[in-house]
Image (cartoon, rainbow, N blue to C red; front, side, top):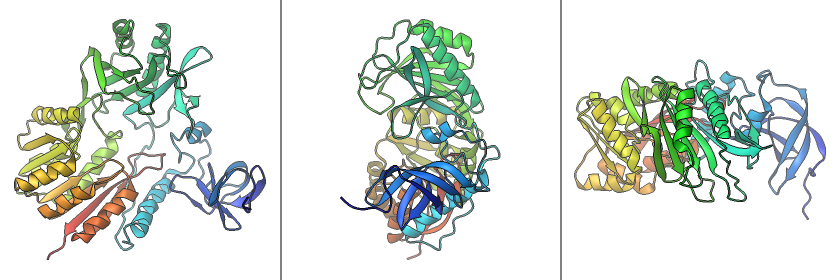
Length: 457
């Protein structure tokens, strides 16, 4: 058995040197890396070693001997333990710096572009209670339906009433809906036994419209007294305009299944973004922080330097929020999206906003880009806003074959963004600048906007 400089359960006094990309404190004992939750740079802490591995270990703080001047004193332990707000113990200006440095690090290490300017992170004036969507698991604890959040890396539910980063009206609605379901005798899902009925309560609320959608994720289709429960929810929460049952019969960590049934009201809510109205369905992607999304999209449009002659491709277009925001400033917008429901929403949203110069297709982005290239669609600007896994290499090939003048890349994962801009650079696109935007205050996540320009041949 290998010897390490530390042993499990022993205590040490260490000084925190840095934060990991997951927001954990980093310390070293004889060169051996330790990751420590709820510990900040410059803090001196007494720790207990919890886990030891070949390259690094994990430890827990027992006592703070010297605290960081940037520590938030009233940070709630459960927000760190669940991972809901893993940076809530760090002052907000320092959170913004941390995110800027994260982007700089991946550009240096992954993209090999140390000289590209990364601008200071655009933050929020009030970086709390911003989420317009909640997905809350339900368990039976001490005979009661209980809502909360899982402890990190486990399925142990920690009961919570105030989620800190969610719209307070959503927090209140979760409590009220949970109590109504308890009153009607609805049984919570038991993950281990794959028994019971109610898995999650999902709520979306329009930031401007205040319209609310309630999605009850159930293990089975048959929902006893569904209509009566829906009426009780509507009576208690008048903002609710849509109550949907989503059925997920699988034994899986995936939250939603593919079947939706409207129990009461509409199959969508509406909200506004940059002055346009959007229809949002149960499974459509919509950014969770409306206030910061408006800043993000405005930066993206400013980077693109749009004019009336531009042909724009809006890849991974979702319900059309980016393309429709800029449609009046360009000649035509082409959007594609793999989620059929979102494509229907995008077409409807174009109608709602009287926009006639936008075309939306359903399918994989890389496949449709090749199709449009064959049909001689020649965009001058391409916007991409992919999921965390980033862009498919064949999508980058197809984009570069079309030779747009500019590519604006909106990313929710700096690591895959850095990998992708390197591929674009190899095909003649120069990364000009990067703007981090804090869409997820109190968490480790950061959104970035990158501008790439085609180099003259």
